[in-house]
Image (cartoon, rainbow, N blue to C red; front, side, top):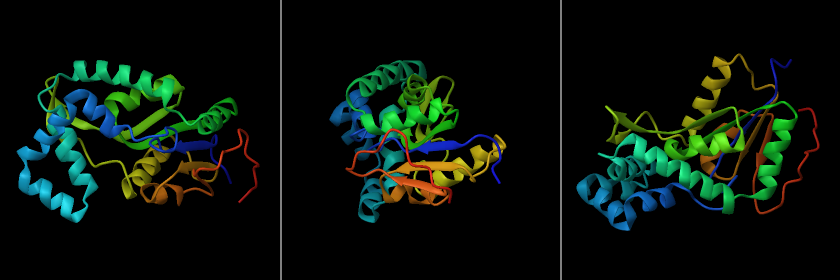
Length: 212
């Protein structure tokens, strides 16, 4: 039995976009030298995270290191500009067409991504989605700190964030569509009776709906 409107949850990097956005945004802000400096400020932790392939810790070291001390307003301005650039040149047209099909159908559309809030929130606004669940860098008194605000939004954290958002809005997983491309999306897609793995194959605009 369904509760409320259908929901469509989309990963972003390599699902809606054709390339990774996080590293490009950080390079735009700090350059490759800024990323190297962020890693160099915490050498032992950086090496340990690299050896362990701990992507969550590396995200905090690099994103926190590049953003720390910057004004939130300045980063938000850069984020809006970056979001517009991504929208103009880096979208998978077939996936965006599917997203817009969901919007026309009256479904709630939410982005669930490890991408960073300063650009993903305006990106979501430009696409017209209902909510953006993503990775955020902590800030205080208008300045960014050198750590994440909460956990990196990937893997099990994606599923947890989406489940919490559904519960908050009185929605269920009965008519949930989830779109993703990688192992980091698998826990989120496991919530859905209609998971869609985005591969090289082109998605049709309107899916054939088969009741699970």
